[in-house]
Length: 406
Ligand SMILES: O=C(O)CC[C@@H]1NC(=O)NC1=O
Ligand SMILES: [Fe+3]
Image (tube, rainbow, N blue to C red):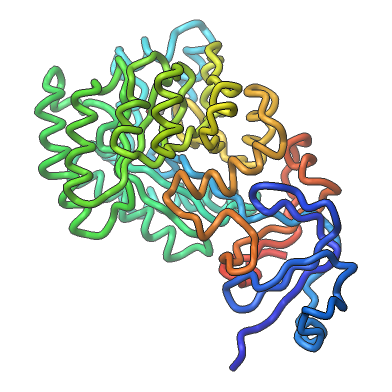
């Protein structure tokens, strides 16, 4: 049987890169967008008028965007860290908490104690909130297990979320996130475990789409991160990094040297890092939720990245420590309010550029032939999605051509 043909008329279309000036008609057949054209031209002679007339009309008006892509989350984890939130309000720094064995290691303890089922259930609630706010693709990292058993447990949960929810999940192994207590003062030995045991075991089970590292004075050095990158490349896996978040380490340049998909956080990114990323096509992933939560003061070099042509993505960094925020369209607002992106740049940051940060070019944009992951919003203009901080504006959500919401 012929694939179902659906269409929307008179939508204000943001296609992943730009907003079309005239109200548009968008035609979806099966899993793909097959046509998009100004609604006034429905009877354009080049169009198969009968096909258009036979299509199922799915709605009129509103704003259409590609499905939102959250390209940086730590969505799977045990426990919560409200106590540290209170400590930071009393003036204790994130780094101090981490040095006292809190921070990431606090969540490592809770995640190791949690069953796979419990991790699935708590992550599922957070994922549903993202889906209800227009997310069609989400990246989920490991990094709270820090052992073969528990890193694989986290990644299996991420794969199950992909199977059981109408969403695309991209998994990233972030075993080089923190030094587990059993390896205290033996960071190089732990990196051996990451490269020689955790990564191969996860890869063998088909659990890894990309490999990430945390390069920071409270985490791992450039040399240690490079060893993880080499192990990833030996297994044919792309790399990315948490880079220049609290200080300038040079991780962005290292990531670019390995043609990494993205360097993330990048508050302390310098000009040589920008130029290396621009030359390598490495995406700069902005995480305004962590900047906001930590009350950071060092802004990422937006203007310099813009003029160098570094693609900028925007993501939630949803995690229990530095960004306990599951509200994707809030990230659009924070990217504009805190980092001075334009609303159009922020939207491109959670669609087309976010897809690039995940190594994909078939999602994140709406054009003939693109995969039909799209959202229709009850707003008058795309800028409104960044301007107003308001849940419940999603009218319809389509994943691979199938209506999943509205
Ligand atoms: O605090 C946590 O639990 C994760 C923090 C998160 N991980 C990282 O490498 N940088 C961050 O902000
Ligand atoms: Fe992160």
